[in-house]
Amino acid sequence: MARFEALIKPIADGKALRDALEQLAQSWGGVLTWLDRRNASLDLVSGGLPVKLLLELRRGDVLSVLVSSREGMGAGAPRSQKLLDQLLSELLKHVPRAQVQYRSDRDGPIFQAV
Image 1 (cartoon, rainbow, N blue to C red):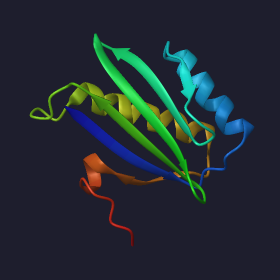
Image 2: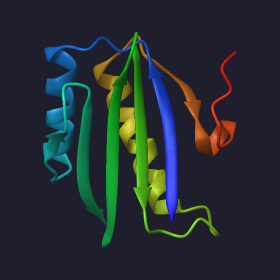
Image 3: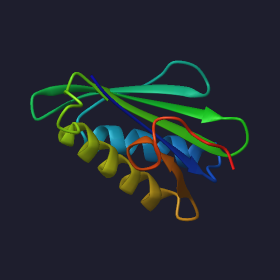
Image 4: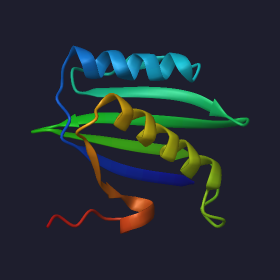
């Protein structure tokens, strides 16, 4: 089972961010579901593969992104990883000052705070 995580900062919670996430979901043919004020879920099908995106607005100015699917990690889960790349690219377009602080596929499975 594929599981990729990323942290983006700085992210300002507000209408602009929520609108950007809604637009992203619509452009990908999915529906963004707000589970509560700080957590959202997006279910997609990418190349016949069901994928779940979870977004968490953490304290401060951090957005946590989790991409999970049933794609096998033995080959590196290329479809799921591509979706993470696309998601991060789109998010960074909407939040120009933000940067990716951590990616589990690049920096290891556990975030090491510096």
